Image 1 (cartoon, one colour):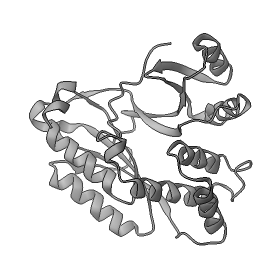
Image 2 (cartoon, one colour; image 1 turned 30 degrees about the vertical axis):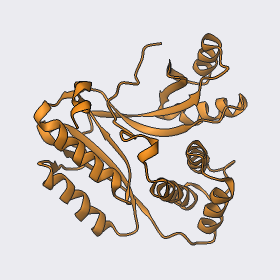
Image 3 (tube, one colour; image 1 turned 60 degrees about the horizontal axis):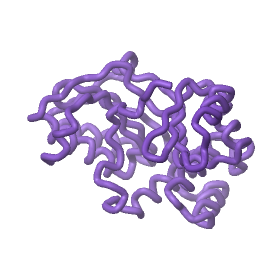
Length: 247
């Protein structure tokens, strides 16, 4: 099936060895907390949102007792009262950037996100301004070790997959937002634990960025991803990979 892994969502650019483990875990714990409080409680069997959050935490090697503790605190009313909010804006060269946040202080989050855009030559837009640039898709990433590519692909199609791609020892499965839960159940049936499972915003059109603007664009992405309130950042940048070597 046709590839889709070159969406140019530059994630974990600095590599796992440079990532701040504590910050990653803090965001995952927040994801679990939000899932418990907004998705239907602390039983993952009856809370698909929590099941996804747990899967993502396991994919980042979060210890089971840390996951269980986060769930218990959220069920008990601890862990903060977070709301989920999104921002749509434009970066250097008019590229589209969609930001997903979970915050306990919306005023702080709005101010911070706006400042990042402004400092890097971008601007926030109105809600819905990127509606035709991104579409929501379910994306699962699993280890390809021991999988028969043809057999696995057929199993995923049976579970509702639109696309399956094998690359660098991983299998990436894409599905419609509506079939996200069905595919999650299919993987459960096959006893396959995803390294990552999420609803992502996939660009339908790409935007080229100039070499001169690329460094500024990456500073904006880094600033957003380093913010504790920001959970995910998506963009539609198409770039020459040689730009990365000059940063």
